[in-house]
Amino acid sequence: ILNVEQSPQSLHVQEGDSTNFTCSFPSSNFYALHWYRWETAKSPEALFVMTLNGDEKKKGRISATLNTKEGYSYLYIKGSQPEDSATYLCAFIYNQGGKLIFGQGTELSVKP
Amino acid sequence: DAGVIQSPRHEVTEMGQEVTLRCKPISGHNSLFWYRQTMMRGLELLIYFNNNVPIDDSGMPEDRFSAKMPNASFSTLKIQPSEPRDSAVYFCASSLSGGALGEQFFGPGTRLTVL
Image (cartoon, rainbow over all chains, first blue to last red; front, side):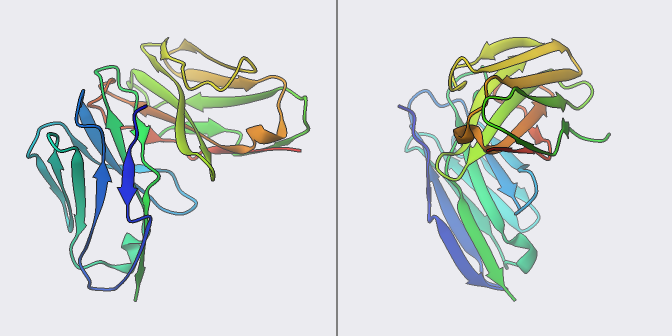
């Protein structure tokens, strides 16, 4: 059974705080990892697609790292803003076919 | 581009009725995915297509569920007969490069309620 775990389940921070959360996945048969941002009442939006061990991606104040050997990825948000409030999902892919296995997400709430 | 289009946005039906959900992927995308979101199980992949061909339908819960993609610009997910436990939000997504490396673009979802 392929299991993708995200922690913490929820996170409450103050505006301006930097934060990070974790996605853990099976280290064997790794093919790719996706990060998505999902705002309430909207649809998931892709943040990053990561494939290489040691990969680091950045988009504005959000960045992500990948360790395929130990099976984890970190998502970092620098200087959180209220508009960053959303659920952040990671999805693991174990073959070229493209079937994504999603974690349950980390729900981030940023208070002004 | 209008993005992924799904219809209807909301559907309320009675147990035993047939339900058809529709999806129009982004033009030029060659992969299409159907997901179901529930509180209990989160976001689950039901089935996906590459170049209109179903690749993996292992997530389809049971024979009451079927999906088709008759052409590159249209797909349907059908539930017949529907049951209350099918109540969920159903998302359709498409991607350009297909497979594992293409980021997926999600539609707005169809919220299905089966009474």
